[in-house]
Image (tube, rainbow, N blue to C red):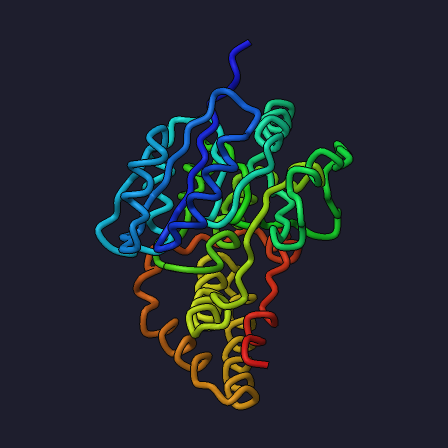
Length: 299
């Protein structure tokens, strides 16, 4: 029996050592029909040279500058797999996760995304040993009271569904892109489910989240998620709430980053022109967006 083609798509930028380790782990994956694509966002730290020398089996796509998450879409468009796995440049799937993911997709044609159980790599002294001892509980992590999005450090997607949903919102540059595309996937009638036994490991870096980029892009893109996806009445109420949160958080945390993000959301709103498609009220009510968390970076 021929295994369905699976494409692993990684986006990287100036993290040569992490990329090397992730690709070395990917070489251990227990699945035959695998395509590996690395989209480089203009790295200057020798990443490209390392890839050419040590990973000739990898398909490398070179960007001329850092294009943010838009570069992921180029990788998705060049993927040939029926299913794709999305990872960061410092994450990788457990060696049995691809096989387990494919099995879930093959059994459920309405399954659009398999959200991996993304675990902090640094919490484990021996990842391989943890994998061997891991109990396989073949059941979805679901709750009828809400809908789940997914973590871009480890997720499997049905390529045809992801393409129909329009891939990631290129105007976001960073952060909240998974939430935005999740609205469209649910609106198409597909499911996003997580399974305890399908694992990815991520080198979570608090340093990256402590810069101005995270609070700025999370906040600005929160406005755009609302304006693109929420029904009109709900969008107005949520926008007022977000403006208040920006003002309060800026005073409380003595920073202007939230106000700048709010200002730019309005000024740059032409970037999402013609991209609004309100989803059903049920999806908005059940897909819980953690708006409050976006305003906690300097506490």
